Structures are given as C-alpha cells and as structure tokens.
Image (cartoon, rainbow, N blue to C red; front, side):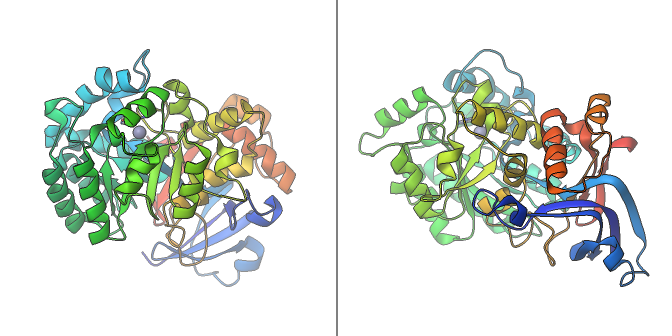
Amino acid sequence: MGFQAFRSSFLDFIADPFFVPEAESVRYFADGLMVLEDGMIKDLGAYEDLKGTYAEVPIVDYRDRLILPGFIDTHIHFPQVEVLAAYGEQLLEWLNKYTFPAEGKFHDKSYAQKVATVFLDELMRNGTTTALVFATVHPQSAEAFFEEASRRNLRMIAGKVMMDRNAPDFLTDTAENAYQESKALIQKWHNNGRLLYAVTPRFAITSTNEQLRLAGKLLEEFPDVYLHTHLSENVNEVELVAQLFPDSNGYLDVYDQAGLVRERSVFAHGVQLRDDEFQRLSAAKSAIAFCPTSNLFLGSGLFKLTKAKSAEHPVQVGLGTDVGGGTSFSMLRTAHEAYKVVQLQREKLSPFKALFLGTLGGAKALYLDDKIGNFGVGKEADFVVLDVKATPLMAFRTPNPTAHSLAELAEKVFTLIILGDDRAIAATHIMGELAYQRDLT
Ligand code: GUN
Ligand code: ZN
C-alpha cells in the first residue's frame, strides 16, 4: 500500500463540543492534505504547508469535496434489512408481527451471507465505516457477517443474539447454548483483524436471569468484549420488564444485577430512563445509542439527549440507525431526526454536535477513539468524501462548496444534515482504499 495522499477540505473533531467550545473542538482545513502510510494516518495539514514534505507522493484530488471521518453507527441489526418500512405497530407487536419471522430465515447460512453482502454494501453507500451490529440467534448469522466484514477489512463489532424465552421456538436458544456458542464466536472473531465481538442478549424480556448471568460471566472471562442490548425503549416494554423481574429496581438494574453495566456496554435507546438510571450509566462509563428515526417510527418517544450529555452526569452517546426499527441507513438522515427530537424538547442540537455524535462521539462510546473517529496521526484511515452539492436543491442552497470560516462551515454542515442522504456520499475509503464510489455504481 505504501504512501497515499488526498487533497480536499477536511473536517473532524479533536474534543467533545458538548463540553468544549465548538471553536476548540472542530478542526478544519479548507484546502488540506491528508497523507497515509499503509492505510494509517501519517499527517494532516494545510496543503500549502505539507506539499513540499510529500512532493513524491501522488495526490488523489478531491477538491470541492468535504472529507469527514467515516460515520459510526452504534446500533443496527443486519438481519432486519427486509423489516424496514413495516407498517403500523409499536415495539412489542412490531417484533412479533414482522421482526421475529424475518429473523427466522437466518438459520440458513447462505441467506445470511446474501443479506450480509447487501447490508455492508448499504453501509458503504452511506459512508458508515464502523457499526455495532446485532446478528440473529443463529451463530451462523454472526459467522456470515464476520466473514463478509473480514473480506472487506472493515472495523465492525457484532454478536450472536442470546434469547431463551418470550420468542418463537425457531428463534430461541438456551442459557447454556448461548453461552457456549457466544464463547466459540469470541474465540474465533474477537480481535480477528479489525473485528470485535459483542455479547448480545436481545433485551431483558427475551432472556432469563440465568442467561443474563451467563452473559455477565462471558464479560468476566473476556473483559475487552462488548455488551450490546436494548434498554428502556418503550413504555409497555418497561412495564413488562418490571413484571418479569419483580426483584429489580427498574430496567437498568436487571442488567446491573447480572454484571452487564460497565465500560464497553452499549444500550440502545434509553428513551424511558429515569434520572437515577442516567446517573448509574454515567458512573459505570456505559454508553447509549441514540436512535432517533427508530424512536419516531415505532412511536417510542423522545430521547433526553441534553440530560444524557449533562456536565454533572455525562453519559457516552453515539447515534444509531437501528435499521429495521429505524428508517434509514444514512447517518446524515439520522442526525437530521436527532435534531428534530431535540427541537421537540425545546432545545438545540448544533450541526457540529450532531456530526460529532456520528463520528468521534460514536468512537468514544465504543472505546475505539484511539483507532478511529477522527484524523489523529496513527489512526486507521476510514473516511467519507462528501458532495455538499449532491442534489439540485443542495447545490442551490450551497453554491460555493468550500467554507472559509467556522460560521460558514456550520451552515454548510447543517444543510448537509438536513438535506443530505446517501446521494451526498461521493466515496467511502477503508484504510485508505476506495470501497465505494457513487459515480461508478
Ligand atoms: N428490542 C428488542 N429487540 C428489538 C429490536 O429488534 N429492535 C428494536 N428497536 N428494539 C428491540
Ligand atoms: Zn435495535
């Protein structure tokens, strides 16, 4: 691979704009040069400053484009591609009517392989370079996903779902089976190349206490694997959890009693969380995946982002598409809906904060900010090339693609978030290599 260089505008984050003034958290080069060595970032700066040092390196010219770190989707289900746009139900009915039947098909590994390909193609088309991914209960579904992600050299986290009750027979395992199968998958795939494993009990309703306890045992045995589950999404769900676990002090406590609330634990949704639960997540350094398109589509409610990002009890937050409860693979669209969810609570989500959640914020939530999330020297060069004039409307709204001040940049980013989607993704690069180019497909 050797050296590669890219000339473009570059935008990334070097701090959290929820806690540090935006001018100090945003890094921007209107005419920049990014140099890679063997797929890792070697240098980034103004083109004029760096061109002499790297005069020998051939330059890929992306002028008039905007390069961002690849998007990071902190919660998505690869087997739910065909569940997108399922009409009319809220969470528990939606699971039974649409989602469980669709997931049943993944006992067939060749079907799982086919869907994994479609799914990862779609992530690349949307500039999403890392995701935290649910498979199904079938170990072969996780195998199919990891094999395809490995073939593409992607940094992905995934896991086989654990569920031993309150689901159709064709989708349930047992506490002991789930433990053994998950363990075998961890040993095979965790830290295999760029891949990582997440122990994945679906949610409290579909696991017995024994299964949750064994999930906790896996985390003890393999302390650097992830825990990925759903939490406090929907009012009826929270009520059912209280009935199923009468000895718990609320939904989060069910997971806490099993040893599942810790660093590298990622909880999707958290729409119905109580204040003390936010505080517990903060103390435990766990993360929440905020999934606005899903929370609106399934009628779950409005996630309290401002509370999650409070100075007193900050919780790590990333953005999740939650396909197929969510309605789009696009992290731009997801940021757009996040903005509206915050608006409905009479608060503001600035364009930079929204973009942070989809890049460095996601990397921090996944404890991967030493590897991805911005263009720091030594990081893996997964990045997305944006066309801020992708549609006639965007071109009208943003006639000049290059911003020359922070205020101008904020306006361009906001337009991108509100009007942009997969059409704005001109290219996606993985470890420097071209993985998707809009105009060629
Ligand atoms: N809770 C349990 N399973 C699911 C799922 O598949 N999607 C969503 N959105 N919530 C869940
Ligand atoms: Zn989900």
